[in-house]
Image (cartoon, rainbow, N blue to C red; front, side, top):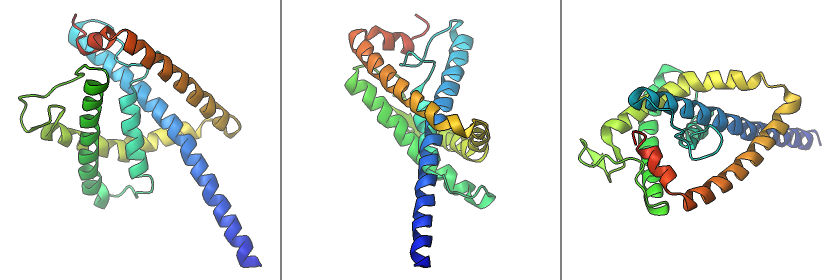
Length: 202
């Protein structure tokens, strides 16, 4: 009887941990999407002297950064942050984020009919949408994220009061779904939006 009770308690705690991790994923996606949007905004402003929204959503978010952060979060959620794991994280981040960049490039080309970036002619390019040197860069950035940025985000998320954390996460998800639907509809009707994102100097 006692063993059965312990098993039920263990399974309940495991389910609660899973729920908490899903809620954390909502915040990680949102925060990293916003930070990515901010980085893109500053980069383009420095490069061409114009403020350009580089996200496809109405909200100030670049979702590719959010999805990249989620990939790393899911891959390395239980990884111990010690030096022996650095090579493993670097290699996995380089391969997986490089593949993600490649798939995103193909997605925009064949779904929206536009090239958001193109590395044709670059050193060791792979199908025009990533290169080996860029994959190495992704490996470095991914390693920095796992060992430094992710722990910082966890601390920021921990400051959100528990009594509103879940409700706020649900509101964020609902808003993002609506925003995504309207944004995709808008992009299909106005493909020049993507073109201006790709060519901010125009």
